[in-house]
Image (cartoon, rainbow, N blue to C red):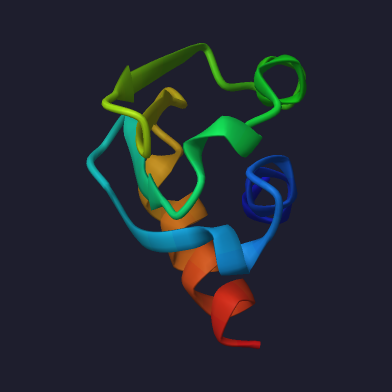
Length: 77
């Protein structure tokens, strides 16, 4: 799911910063308008919360921490 989230926000170069809590993936994006909300819903994001134009939180049940760990690896590659 981590790779799909990266794709859905239009790639790792659009992600300025990211973090998580138990149920949310938190992203600070360079361009918040590039989010594919329908694809996020299809891959399992239950809710998308926008905090301003470039900050997004995605509700993902109890999977947020493992997803962020995988995103860290994918973005470094």
